[in-house]
Length: 391
Image (cartoon, rainbow, N blue to C red; front, top):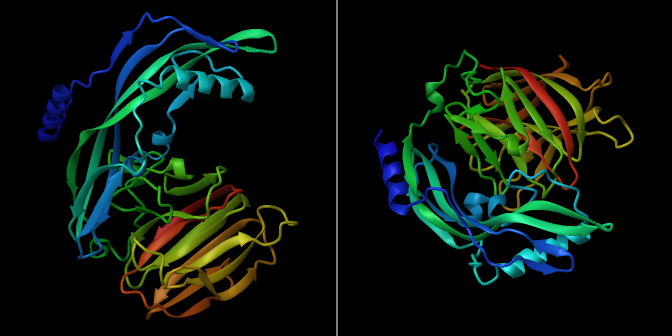
C-alpha cells in the first residue's frame, strides 16, 4: 500500500493524467500528403526491470539510459495506422513522404533526445535483488493524414512523439532464492501460475544481447518478445525475427548432484542452435559446458540435427571449444530424450538412451542449469521442451 501511495503522489505531482488538446492550426499539404488533424496528447509510459545480484558478493553499479530501459520503444517515434483507424497498405514511397511531411510539420516542437542520455544510476548490493519501475512522460502529436496512391486518396492515423522525459522510478526489494533453498530431489520448474511466463523465484533470464531487457509481471518473467515461453511445464522457443548472434535463455541454480531429464521436439530450426548445459553464473557464459543442437546439413530436413558438446572459452572473446563433435542420431526424427547428470564433478549426457558421453572435471564453483538458443541474422526456429525434470 505504501508503494501504491507513493505512485499516486508521484503521478499527482507531475500531473501525468492523459491529456488531449486539439489545435485549430491549418492543415499542411505537400505532394498529395495532407495532415488533416493534429491533437497533442500526453501519456505515461512505464517499464519494469529486475536487477538480480543474488549470486555475487560485490556491489554492481547500473547506469541506465533511455535506450537501455525502453529498447525499441525509444527508437520508434512515428507510428502509422493508429487512433482506431484501420491500417492500410501504404506503398514505401508514400510512407517515406508521409514520414518526411510529419517530421517537417512538427520540427519546431521536437525535442532531440540522445539514446545514451542518462536516466538513472544506482547500486545493487551483493546478494540482493531489486525490481525497478521507470516512469516516462511522453508527449505526442496524433491525428489523420491523407495521401495519394495509384490515383486514389487514402488516409491513415499517425502518432508522432515530440518529447520524452523521465518522470521518476519506484524501487521494490525482492528476496533472493539461493540454490541451497531448492530441494535436491524434487523438480524445480515453476509454480504453474504464470500463464506463458517464467516464475521469477525459479528462473532467471540471461542473454548476451546488450539491449536485453526482461520484464516481469506479477512475479512472472514475460519473455515472449525474445521467443521464450513456458506453459504447464513445457518450454517453447519460437522465433523468426533475426538479429545479431546472441544467446537467449533462462537459468536456475541446481544441486551439486543435479540429475536433469527432458524431451526435445524440433519443429524447425534454421539459422539457430539450441544450447542446454551449465553456467557458473547467470552473469557470464565463461567456462560453461553445453550440449549444442544444430542443423546437421542444410540439404537435410529442417528438424534433423547434429549434436556436439562444447565448453565456452573463459577469456574474451568468448567462443565455444568443441569437446565431442558431430554426434548424430542414426534414427533422427527431430524428437529426443536427453538426460544430464553431475556426479563427482563429472557431467554425463545420454541422448535417446545411447551410451553416456562424459566430460572431464567440471570446474564450476556454482552450477546453474541453462536452456536457450543462439540466434543469427536469419532465424526460423520452433522447438518445444517438455517433461522437464530437474532433481
